[in-house]
Image 1 (cartoon, rainbow, N blue to C red):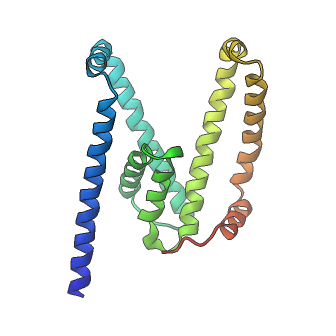
Image 2: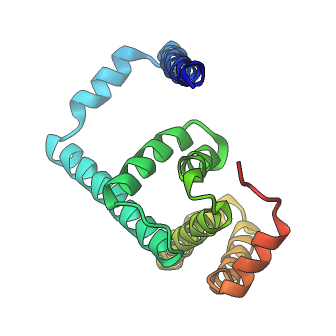
Image 3: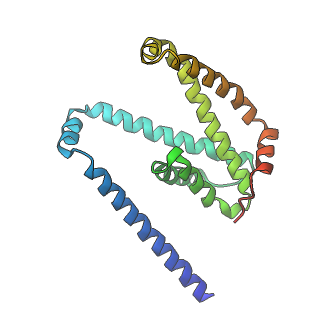
Length: 195
């Protein structure tokens, strides 16, 4: 038992060091390609009020997303505190920032909740959350499309019909995703994720 605990401690220590090292490498790579003088000049032109407003909107958005996900978890009888959901969401958001399609963030949250031994239910909450976000973005497209139509037509006349077709497809598919039958079908099709 003692050996197993020391192995876990070593593994956690290694993971922490690896994450820190990866963060430093990514930061160094970013700094290599950024003109720091221009970056500082641009930051200097930013209004503190706007910066504070953007920060506030970002924080409130993250809080609402964590709360929404916690509600979805509770609907699947997965009990976790709002604080835990917030922590997992924030770490997941950070992790997802470095992966294509932010899939790393969802993978982290799925991994973090593996203790419930109901990965399918956790996966369904992540899918529902994703599609709810997609639906919200689609609504913003509907609201913003008339204002941007002239610019889109100048860029490419084919872009507007393609965007409208994609939007209609998304809006048609999303309500189906909230159906428990569809979620159950997806869970049966996907390979088991129990670990």
